[in-house]
Image 1: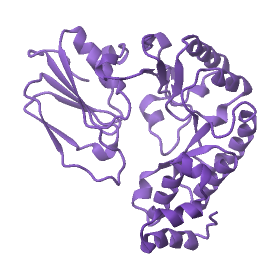
Image 2 (image 1 turned 90 degrees about the horizontal axis):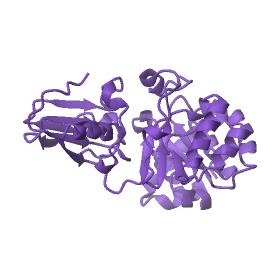
Image 3 (image 1 turned 90 degrees about the vertical axis):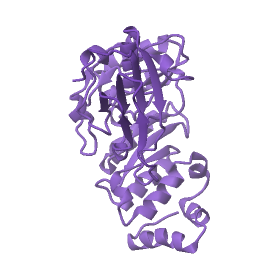
Length: 343
């Protein structure tokens, strides 16, 4: 538990190490301290969370002007990316630092300070926390427990902002009537809506589909296709989904390199391309130390560029991608050794 008492300088520093969107925890801390008349400063480092990206030297931040410094780290590779000096109270948190560490209750449910991030267009929050599933690769169940309603839309909704971003991990697992009720409330705001996390495609029903597509949706609908064994139910629900949603308007996060073979990974990608859906490859950390890393890298590069994925076969992409014959042959040897068929 953080000790939020005893400040004298009335100045707080919030350090956002690697968030790709406005950091909700830091916005709530900002609200807390501004209510107590503190000056709040934000430092954004914009570090990458990918394990294979070149890491900068540890960032040294002088905290002598601050009573307290709060550091948010979302990705494990950045756990030691920052060192704060000359400040007696430095608090680190975030899933990349310690996924069990939580905000104090009196901060957790505060309205976010949207002024913290200049140019932000989104009201950001959770309706639900937790998940009904307990996937080996995911920490949500361990961190947040079983699925439960966490907040109402009004707890984070700002009518002055044009869009709403939901961070729920398994919103569609709500009982159907409750799920539909929240979707109707979102529609009534008149704002553009997006669910940032991949929705659970296995839990779709016709009523949920109609309510989702009735939203003023922002971007593609994004779902998850993490387990190759889910292909039959994905295929079944896709037939229902495609009755309402056109080609190339659906994206699936596809986890690769975790308890799946290269053939299973490639099969899911080809299945989505055949059905005119976009994959977004999520490489498990295993991929970065695997002897098959060249293949994983090429597959992600192809899939995660929609224009190329839709219009260029994978084999052609590999032929054109590499400046040297040696690098191309790394991937081709893996394909040959694994008996993969690429088209």
